Image 1 (cartoon, rainbow over the protein chains, first blue to last red):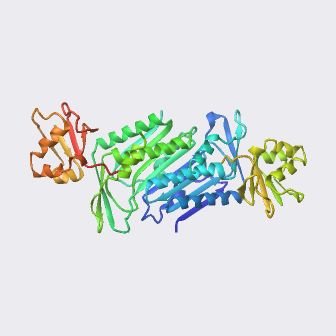
Image 2 (image 1 turned 180 degrees about the horizontal axis):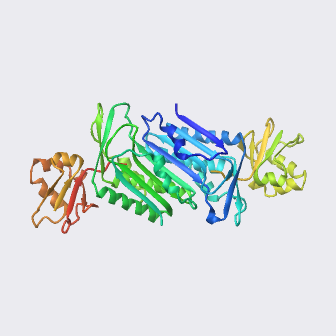
Image 3 (image 1 turned 120 degrees about the horizontal axis):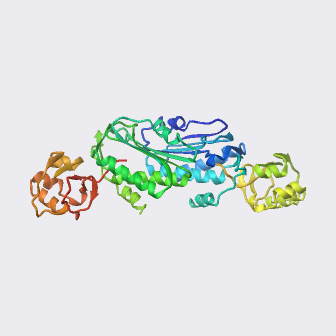
Length: 150
Length: 150
Length: 83
Length: 83
């Protein structure tokens, strides 16, 4: 049985500490890939990022994306943590980690999870600050990244 | 100036603690990708892995691979730690981490670094244990993975 | 059924959720959007550019042609920008 | 010049490094391999399948056709299996 950890939370997290459980039973794990998405300060113009989400659907949709990743690649563990609420520059926003026997599948699954989370998980970013302001627009490149997985 | 950390060492390392410096000056960093390669127990048949390396050339070759990654992608930081000597199942062998503004370049560079380290850095694995034994043969799939970067 | 609005759709409509009772002839998501737009300027503004508004039926992404019969919850929101 | 041997090349040759002084007509890496093989069964065994032995000249990967003139250090080893 693969290990799945999935949380949506307001609190900051420690990427390092969060991925440790994935290696707790690590006899067969040869590769651990982790991705941390962080809040940039946008050249000092961003005071904070506010992330609105759809409670319930956010967890369900991330769960569907994780199930899809398990169906595509033989993995031992997947972790997804996504924050909501107010986030300051330098703080983590999202953590995705994948563990498996080989690096190719761990890398592919981590990138797939991020591409799908970006375009399918119901979260919306609003910028607070000087120059920056308002809702962040979805990027065409994110749609392109997600569509490459077919 | 991007931050580069490069070490070849006998001692185990803590992936989590090692990647922290990459985010120390994190105003412009939106993405951190880390890859940890671990020693599998091969179904309980592996007692230990012994990694021989070419001192001097190992560091130089990893340095050339890092320089190539900086030339290909706009990154803020790259870290590579590779162990040598005796390694036991469950212990980390290699850590590669990349930090930059966007996830696509951080993912690509981390995968590129691993593919190139596998085929270019002068390290050789020998297996100690019951069924396993002798020098690990290079894999055609590793050559194929490295050649895809052109 | 319960209607939910998020991000700038929520701000334009002016509320986060409400109970709605569309008439029987409103069958698809697209029908429901037309009906909502007829309810006031705030809805008309929220759905001014219909193609940029995404929909979820009972917490799963849905297309404009999807039928709403039987759904308990419908949500409207801009393209996602999480991750 | 200094010759280094690693992994199973080292085991077959029977030593990790040595000073070598090939004759003047040995110009390329390939020439040097032929000359080394003539020095004994241990070298012949190490280079039995020449294509699987990789070479570095002064700590940079080199091809069989590379010229050895001026190099201080040459290393022979199997395909790398690190990472």
